Every structure is written in C-alpha cells, then in structure tokens.
Image (cartoon, rainbow, N blue to C red; front, side, top):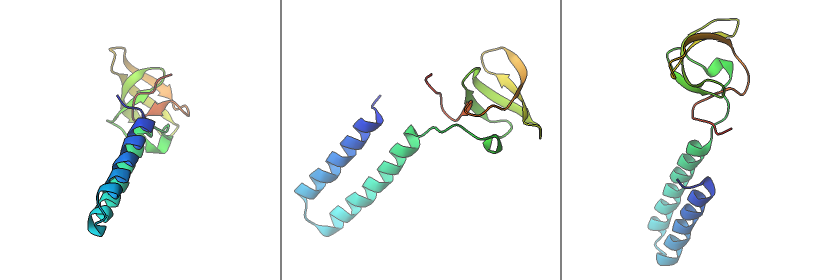
Amino acid sequence: MLTKEECINALENIIFNVGVARSDYRTSGKAKEDYCTLNSLIEEHFSNPPLKFEELQERETYYHIYYGWISIRSISDCECILINTLNSDGYKQIEFEEDCFYKKEVQV
C-alpha cells in the first residue's frame, strides 16, 4: 500500500506533467479540478481522528484500541456503551474513553 506522501507526490507529478504537455486552458482547468478531488480523497483516506462520544451510533462498527473491531449494541446517557466484540468475546459494557474509538483500524 502506498503511503500518504507517495500518493501526494504522484498526484503532484500528474499535475506537473499535464502543465508541461498541454497548454490548453480547458484541459489544465479540468486537471486542477481533478487534482482537488483526488487530494480530498487522499486526505479522507489517511485521516482517522479519534471519535467523540457524540459521533458514536448504535448498530455501527468501529475500531477500539483495546478490543479491536466492535459493534455498538446500545449507548446510554452516562457514556456507558454496550459493545459486541467481533472476536467472539461476546457483549461487554464499557465506559467511553477519549482516543479509543476510530472509524478505521489504528496501528499502536
């Protein structure tokens, strides 16, 4: 898998090469638009900030740094969460902790 830096370098090379190969304004304008779209996708793909309590939803799957992939069964107002661990540990009730829930797997 490519790193974020490799993706950005490849994207910048494409824009540079389009500018060298074509001086047509319409083509370079479209290339810049495509560059912005692909750059946004790269940022979205590599961005994985920890989720806040308000962002968690029942019946959704998240990555938890201690339990791995989990599914949230229910959420209470006291920030207690009933989770189903996907590694066959069954249901557990846990308290919400900052920097523990993510949309994608985190390498620690």
